[in-house]
Amino acid sequence: MPTFITIGYGDEAGYNRVSDECKRAAHARDDALSAAGALIGRAEDPVQVRNPDGAGVRIERGPFLRSTLPIAGFAVFDAEDVDAAIERVSQTPCAMAYGVVEVWPLTT
Image (tube, rainbow, N blue to C red):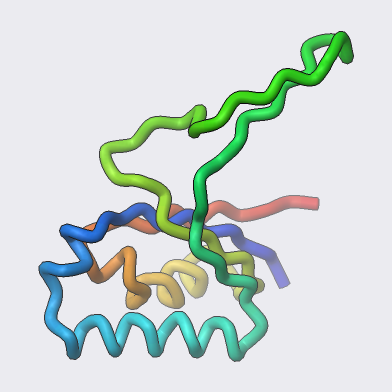
């Protein structure tokens, strides 16, 4: 079965725009994904790591990627195909609270 990584983007303003019922349903979807074996986590502040030509490690605080919304979290799970992965994340907090969720198929 293929593995997918998802990146959820969202902010507190969008989250606060949805009803409490919508929030409960979205968090219930996250709970169901987790119970089914998905690895789900909230994003914290990133660190950039570079080691050009193996000449020495350079570390910088902060994201390299830029987006209008901050990265809110990640999930890694198996699904039958990309359509099934999309269905699984379509009801999660970022998707429902005016954010967005990217679905990335992983190949090994």
